[in-house]
Length: 73
Image (cartoon, rainbow, N blue to C red):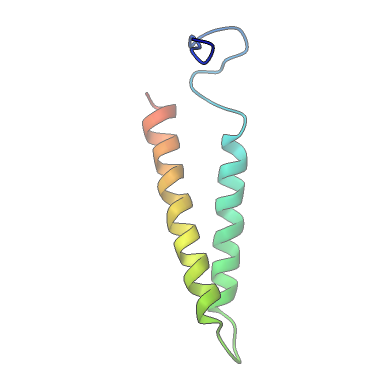
């Protein structure tokens, strides 16, 4: 019962949450790191590229859900 909140209360901006901007910034940082890993010249760290790729894919899915399923609802 304590977790139930009503939308549209004081201080709410639709379904927007303050943590959402951090999710978008983290996605941007992961994307920049992924591109830099792919552009490495002498040796490419395949484990780091795979880890960054999976992380980027996960964050993109979460951002899609956040923007199109929650914000636009």
